[in-house]
Image (cartoon, rainbow, N blue to C red; front, side):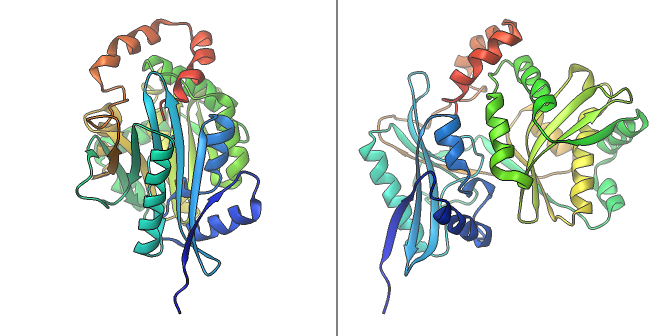
Length: 348
Protein backbone atom coordinates (compact mmCIF):
# COMPACT_ATOMS: atom_id res chain seq x y z
CA UNK A 1 0.00 0.00 0.00
CA UNK A 2 1.49 3.33 -1.07
CA UNK A 3 1.40 6.22 1.38
CA UNK A 4 0.12 9.61 0.28
CA UNK A 5 2.57 12.48 -0.08
CA UNK A 6 1.89 15.53 2.08
CA UNK A 7 3.43 19.01 1.76
CA UNK A 8 3.99 21.02 4.96
CA UNK A 9 5.60 24.33 5.86
CA UNK A 10 8.36 24.61 8.45
CA UNK A 11 7.59 27.32 10.99
CA UNK A 12 10.08 29.39 12.97
CA UNK A 13 10.63 27.90 16.42
CA UNK A 14 9.67 24.33 15.42
CA UNK A 15 12.98 22.82 16.50
CA UNK A 16 11.88 19.19 16.33
CA UNK A 17 10.91 19.48 12.65
CA UNK A 18 14.00 21.59 11.90
CA UNK A 19 16.19 18.77 13.25
CA UNK A 20 14.37 16.23 11.08
CA UNK A 21 14.70 18.62 8.12
CA UNK A 22 18.47 18.95 8.65
CA UNK A 23 18.91 15.19 9.05
CA UNK A 24 17.26 14.75 5.65
CA UNK A 25 19.42 17.50 4.09
CA UNK A 26 22.61 15.91 5.43
CA UNK A 27 21.67 12.56 3.88
CA UNK A 28 20.25 13.80 0.54
CA UNK A 29 22.90 13.88 -2.25
CA UNK A 30 21.15 16.81 -4.05
CA UNK A 31 21.04 19.00 -0.95
CA UNK A 32 23.51 21.79 -0.16
CA UNK A 33 24.42 23.90 2.85
CA UNK A 34 21.78 26.38 1.66
CA UNK A 35 19.02 23.81 2.12
CA UNK A 36 19.59 23.81 5.89
CA UNK A 37 16.70 24.87 8.13
CA UNK A 38 18.77 27.65 9.72
CA UNK A 39 18.31 29.84 6.64
CA UNK A 40 14.68 30.32 7.69
CA UNK A 41 15.96 32.56 10.51
CA UNK A 42 18.17 34.52 8.10
CA UNK A 43 15.34 35.19 5.65
CA UNK A 44 12.70 36.08 8.26
CA UNK A 45 14.54 37.55 11.26
CA UNK A 46 17.58 39.22 9.69
CA UNK A 47 16.18 40.35 6.32
CA UNK A 48 12.49 40.50 7.28
CA UNK A 49 11.18 38.65 4.23
CA UNK A 50 8.43 36.06 4.35
CA UNK A 51 9.79 32.50 4.12
CA UNK A 52 8.04 29.40 2.80
CA UNK A 53 10.23 26.45 3.83
CA UNK A 54 8.32 23.52 2.33
CA UNK A 55 8.91 19.86 3.07
CA UNK A 56 7.34 16.72 1.62
CA UNK A 57 6.43 13.89 3.96
CA UNK A 58 5.45 10.31 3.25
CA UNK A 59 4.44 7.96 6.07
CA UNK A 60 5.81 10.43 8.60
CA UNK A 61 9.23 10.62 6.91
CA UNK A 62 10.65 13.73 5.19
CA UNK A 63 11.39 12.89 1.54
CA UNK A 64 12.05 16.38 0.11
CA UNK A 65 12.64 20.03 1.00
CA UNK A 66 12.31 23.34 -0.83
CA UNK A 67 13.33 26.52 1.05
CA UNK A 68 11.77 29.67 -0.44
CA UNK A 69 11.90 33.37 0.36
CA UNK A 70 9.57 36.08 -0.93
CA UNK A 71 11.37 39.32 -1.79
CA UNK A 72 9.29 42.47 -2.35
CA UNK A 73 11.17 45.49 -3.65
CA UNK A 74 10.14 48.67 -5.42
CA UNK A 75 13.57 48.83 -7.04
CA UNK A 76 14.15 45.19 -7.95
CA UNK A 77 10.71 43.62 -8.23
CA UNK A 78 8.62 41.01 -6.42
CA UNK A 79 9.92 37.45 -6.48
CA UNK A 80 9.80 34.03 -4.83
CA UNK A 81 13.31 32.54 -4.72
CA UNK A 82 14.87 29.23 -3.70
CA UNK A 83 16.86 30.64 -1.99
CA UNK A 84 17.53 34.36 -1.43
CA UNK A 85 21.16 35.19 -0.45
CA UNK A 86 22.23 31.69 -1.56
CA UNK A 87 24.13 30.54 -4.62
CA UNK A 88 22.49 27.11 -4.64
CA UNK A 89 18.87 26.20 -4.02
CA UNK A 90 15.88 24.63 -5.67
CA UNK A 91 14.37 21.35 -4.61
CA UNK A 92 16.23 18.53 -2.84
CA UNK A 93 14.24 15.29 -2.77
CA UNK A 94 14.72 11.55 -2.54
CA UNK A 95 12.29 10.87 -5.41
CA UNK A 96 10.83 12.71 -8.40
CA UNK A 97 7.23 12.60 -7.09
CA UNK A 98 8.27 14.57 -4.02
CA UNK A 99 10.34 17.00 -6.11
CA UNK A 100 7.45 17.74 -8.48
CA UNK A 101 4.94 18.10 -5.63
CA UNK A 102 7.20 20.65 -3.91
CA UNK A 103 7.72 22.61 -7.14
CA UNK A 104 3.97 22.62 -7.81
CA UNK A 105 3.32 23.96 -4.31
CA UNK A 106 5.94 26.65 -4.91
CA UNK A 107 4.12 27.68 -8.10
CA UNK A 108 0.80 27.78 -6.22
CA UNK A 109 2.39 30.06 -3.57
CA UNK A 110 3.89 32.24 -6.32
CA UNK A 111 0.39 32.73 -7.77
CA UNK A 112 -1.14 33.37 -4.35
CA UNK A 113 1.51 35.95 -3.45
CA UNK A 114 1.15 37.53 -6.89
CA UNK A 115 4.91 37.58 -7.57
CA UNK A 116 6.51 38.63 -10.86
CA UNK A 117 8.66 35.51 -11.05
CA UNK A 118 9.68 32.30 -9.30
CA UNK A 119 13.39 31.36 -9.31
CA UNK A 120 15.09 28.03 -8.57
CA UNK A 121 18.89 28.20 -8.15
CA UNK A 122 19.61 24.65 -9.24
CA UNK A 123 22.98 22.94 -9.38
CA UNK A 124 21.61 20.58 -12.04
CA UNK A 125 19.06 21.36 -14.79
CA UNK A 126 15.49 20.27 -14.11
CA UNK A 127 13.20 21.99 -16.64
CA UNK A 128 14.62 22.30 -20.15
CA UNK A 129 11.68 24.45 -21.30
CA UNK A 130 11.93 27.11 -18.55
CA UNK A 131 13.76 30.42 -19.07
CA UNK A 132 17.30 30.36 -17.64
CA UNK A 133 19.94 32.70 -16.27
CA UNK A 134 23.27 31.74 -17.89
CA UNK A 135 25.43 34.31 -16.12
CA UNK A 136 26.79 32.23 -13.24
CA UNK A 137 29.21 29.35 -12.81
CA UNK A 138 30.54 27.58 -9.74
CA UNK A 139 34.06 26.35 -9.01
CA UNK A 140 34.57 23.12 -7.08
CA UNK A 141 37.72 21.02 -6.74
CA UNK A 142 38.89 17.95 -4.87
CA UNK A 143 41.07 18.53 -1.80
CA UNK A 144 43.97 16.06 -2.01
CA UNK A 145 44.97 14.01 1.03
CA UNK A 146 48.47 15.50 1.41
CA UNK A 147 49.16 19.19 2.11
CA UNK A 148 52.09 19.40 -0.31
CA UNK A 149 50.04 17.76 -3.09
CA UNK A 150 47.47 20.55 -2.74
CA UNK A 151 50.23 23.17 -2.95
CA UNK A 152 51.63 21.58 -6.12
CA UNK A 153 48.14 21.39 -7.66
CA UNK A 154 47.95 25.22 -7.64
CA UNK A 155 49.22 26.55 -11.01
CA UNK A 156 52.75 27.94 -10.86
CA UNK A 157 52.00 31.70 -10.95
CA UNK A 158 49.38 31.50 -8.22
CA UNK A 159 51.54 29.12 -6.19
CA UNK A 160 54.29 31.76 -6.29
CA UNK A 161 51.79 34.23 -4.76
CA UNK A 162 51.03 31.82 -1.91
CA UNK A 163 54.75 31.40 -1.25
CA UNK A 164 55.14 35.20 -1.36
CA UNK A 165 52.52 35.49 1.40
CA UNK A 166 54.39 32.93 3.48
CA UNK A 167 57.67 34.79 2.90
CA UNK A 168 55.99 38.07 3.95
CA UNK A 169 55.42 36.57 7.40
CA UNK A 170 51.62 36.39 7.09
CA UNK A 171 49.66 34.23 9.51
CA UNK A 172 46.04 33.09 9.82
CA UNK A 173 43.78 32.96 12.87
CA UNK A 174 40.25 31.72 13.49
CA UNK A 175 38.10 34.54 14.91
CA UNK A 176 35.36 33.97 17.44
CA UNK A 177 33.36 36.96 16.19
CA UNK A 178 32.84 38.93 12.97
CA UNK A 179 34.48 42.23 13.99
CA UNK A 180 37.71 42.02 11.98
CA UNK A 181 35.94 40.25 9.12
CA UNK A 182 33.22 42.88 8.84
CA UNK A 183 35.62 45.84 8.83
CA UNK A 184 37.53 44.31 5.89
CA UNK A 185 34.39 43.09 4.07
CA UNK A 186 32.54 46.43 4.35
CA UNK A 187 35.55 48.38 3.08
CA UNK A 188 36.02 45.91 0.23
CA UNK A 189 32.45 45.99 -1.09
CA UNK A 190 32.43 49.81 -0.78
CA UNK A 191 35.47 49.96 -3.07
CA UNK A 192 33.51 47.84 -5.56
CA UNK A 193 30.51 50.16 -5.36
CA UNK A 194 28.04 47.70 -3.85
CA UNK A 195 26.17 47.81 -0.49
CA UNK A 196 27.32 45.66 2.43
CA UNK A 197 25.21 43.07 4.19
CA UNK A 198 24.44 44.11 7.80
CA UNK A 199 26.96 43.12 10.45
CA UNK A 200 24.19 41.43 12.45
CA UNK A 201 23.64 39.01 9.53
CA UNK A 202 27.19 37.67 9.80
CA UNK A 203 26.90 37.45 13.59
CA UNK A 204 23.63 35.52 13.11
CA UNK A 205 25.34 33.07 10.73
CA UNK A 206 27.97 32.23 13.35
CA UNK A 207 25.28 31.94 16.02
CA UNK A 208 22.90 29.81 13.93
CA UNK A 209 25.34 27.40 12.31
CA UNK A 210 27.91 27.13 15.12
CA UNK A 211 31.01 25.17 14.11
CA UNK A 212 29.72 24.97 10.51
CA UNK A 213 30.32 28.72 10.01
CA UNK A 214 33.83 30.01 10.61
CA UNK A 215 35.84 33.22 10.18
CA UNK A 216 39.50 32.99 9.18
CA UNK A 217 41.55 36.21 9.15
CA UNK A 218 45.02 36.79 7.76
CA UNK A 219 47.35 39.23 9.55
CA UNK A 220 50.78 40.65 8.77
CA UNK A 221 53.81 40.19 11.05
CA UNK A 222 52.68 43.22 13.10
CA UNK A 223 49.22 41.69 13.71
CA UNK A 224 47.33 44.02 11.35
CA UNK A 225 44.32 42.30 9.75
CA UNK A 226 44.68 42.21 5.95
CA UNK A 227 42.17 39.72 4.59
CA UNK A 228 39.30 37.65 6.00
CA UNK A 229 36.84 35.00 4.85
CA UNK A 230 33.63 33.59 6.34
CA UNK A 231 33.27 29.96 5.29
CA UNK A 232 30.60 27.29 5.62
CA UNK A 233 31.21 23.60 6.27
CA UNK A 234 28.85 20.96 4.90
CA UNK A 235 29.50 17.20 4.97
CA UNK A 236 33.07 16.89 3.62
CA UNK A 237 33.14 20.30 1.92
CA UNK A 238 34.39 23.79 2.80
CA UNK A 239 32.70 26.78 1.14
CA UNK A 240 34.48 30.15 1.43
CA UNK A 241 31.44 32.37 0.98
CA UNK A 242 31.96 35.99 2.10
CA UNK A 243 35.34 37.68 1.96
CA UNK A 244 36.99 41.06 2.39
CA UNK A 245 40.44 42.55 2.29
CA UNK A 246 42.46 45.68 2.93
CA UNK A 247 43.79 47.63 -0.06
CA UNK A 248 47.31 46.55 0.86
CA UNK A 249 46.36 42.83 0.75
CA UNK A 250 47.15 42.39 -2.94
CA UNK A 251 50.75 43.66 -2.68
CA UNK A 252 51.40 41.36 0.27
CA UNK A 253 49.70 38.35 -1.43
CA UNK A 254 47.30 38.09 1.52
CA UNK A 255 44.32 36.87 -0.53
CA UNK A 256 46.15 33.92 -2.08
CA UNK A 257 47.67 33.11 1.31
CA UNK A 258 44.18 33.25 2.88
CA UNK A 259 42.67 30.68 0.51
CA UNK A 260 45.74 28.48 0.83
CA UNK A 261 45.43 28.56 4.62
CA UNK A 262 41.74 27.63 4.34
CA UNK A 263 42.60 24.74 2.00
CA UNK A 264 45.50 23.62 4.21
CA UNK A 265 43.31 23.57 7.32
CA UNK A 266 40.53 21.75 5.41
CA UNK A 267 43.07 19.14 4.26
CA UNK A 268 44.19 18.65 7.88
CA UNK A 269 40.54 18.07 8.84
CA UNK A 270 40.19 15.38 6.17
CA UNK A 271 37.73 17.33 4.03
CA UNK A 272 37.36 16.35 0.37
CA UNK A 273 35.93 19.32 -1.59
CA UNK A 274 36.91 22.99 -1.80
CA UNK A 275 33.89 24.90 -3.12
CA UNK A 276 35.16 28.28 -4.35
CA UNK A 277 31.58 29.33 -4.98
CA UNK A 278 29.71 31.32 -7.59
CA UNK A 279 31.18 33.89 -9.96
CA UNK A 280 29.82 35.82 -12.91
CA UNK A 281 31.55 35.00 -16.17
CA UNK A 282 34.02 37.66 -17.26
CA UNK A 283 34.65 39.08 -13.76
CA UNK A 284 37.83 39.40 -11.70
CA UNK A 285 36.72 36.72 -9.23
CA UNK A 286 36.08 34.33 -12.16
CA UNK A 287 39.64 34.91 -13.45
CA UNK A 288 41.12 34.56 -9.93
CA UNK A 289 39.49 31.14 -9.41
CA UNK A 290 40.51 29.95 -12.88
CA UNK A 291 44.09 30.99 -12.06
CA UNK A 292 43.91 28.71 -9.03
CA UNK A 293 43.32 25.77 -11.38
CA UNK A 294 39.56 25.46 -10.77
CA UNK A 295 37.32 24.70 -13.75
CA UNK A 296 33.94 26.47 -14.01
CA UNK A 297 30.70 24.49 -13.93
CA UNK A 298 27.52 26.27 -15.17
CA UNK A 299 24.75 26.87 -12.65
CA UNK A 300 21.19 26.24 -13.79
CA UNK A 301 19.00 29.05 -12.48
CA UNK A 302 15.49 28.33 -13.80
CA UNK A 303 12.51 30.68 -13.79
CA UNK A 304 8.74 30.79 -14.01
CA UNK A 305 7.88 34.25 -15.35
CA UNK A 306 4.44 35.57 -14.43
CA UNK A 307 4.54 39.35 -14.80
CA UNK A 308 7.74 39.94 -16.73
CA UNK A 309 8.93 39.11 -20.23
CA UNK A 310 12.54 38.24 -19.45
CA UNK A 311 14.77 36.83 -16.70
CA UNK A 312 15.69 39.67 -14.26
CA UNK A 313 19.23 41.10 -14.34
CA UNK A 314 19.61 42.50 -10.80
CA UNK A 315 23.40 42.31 -10.70
CA UNK A 316 26.34 44.74 -10.99
CA UNK A 317 27.06 43.60 -14.57
CA UNK A 318 23.83 45.26 -15.69
CA UNK A 319 24.80 48.54 -17.45
CA UNK A 320 21.84 50.41 -15.92
CA UNK A 321 23.42 50.14 -12.46
CA UNK A 322 26.85 51.53 -13.42
CA UNK A 323 26.05 55.12 -12.40
CA UNK A 324 24.70 53.93 -9.03
CA UNK A 325 27.88 51.89 -8.46
CA UNK A 326 30.14 54.87 -9.25
CA UNK A 327 28.11 57.13 -6.95
CA UNK A 328 28.13 54.55 -4.12
CA UNK A 329 31.94 54.35 -4.21
CA UNK A 330 32.16 58.09 -3.50
CA UNK A 331 29.86 58.06 -0.44
CA UNK A 332 31.43 57.94 3.07
CA UNK A 333 31.90 54.42 4.48
CA UNK A 334 29.94 55.16 7.69
CA UNK A 335 26.95 56.36 5.67
CA UNK A 336 26.93 53.39 3.25
CA UNK A 337 27.24 50.92 6.15
CA UNK A 338 24.09 52.49 7.62
CA UNK A 339 22.16 52.69 4.33
CA UNK A 340 23.48 49.50 2.68
CA UNK A 341 21.47 46.93 4.67
CA UNK A 342 18.19 48.63 3.67
CA UNK A 343 19.12 48.17 0.00
CA UNK A 344 20.90 44.83 0.09
CA UNK A 345 17.96 43.00 1.74
CA UNK A 346 16.19 43.42 -1.61
CA UNK A 347 19.20 42.25 -3.67
CA UNK A 348 18.59 38.64 -2.77
